[in-house]
Length: 75
Image 1 (tube, one colour):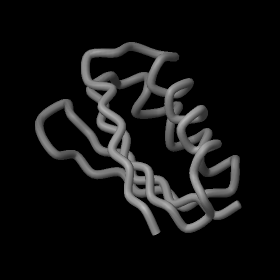
Image 2 (cartoon, helix red, strand yellow; image 1 turned 30 degrees about the vertical axis):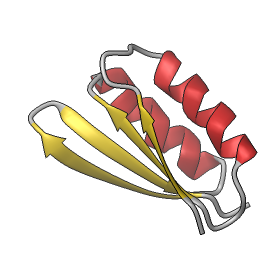
Image 3 (cartoon, one colour; image 1 turned 90 degrees about the vertical axis):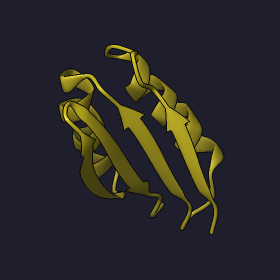
């Protein structure tokens, strides 16, 4: 299992979503993608997309207005 951190701080939608989609496509099942974001639109869209795509998703607020979206690739 690999863990990859994707720094998307300062980037507005849809950039974090597109970057996450591209990165998860390269990863193996069971790998973890941690996407660091600070844009509220991405905070909504990123977990929604990952769940619809069939992955496990956790969201942690690491600072005021800064989140980590943790995606476990399941398929």
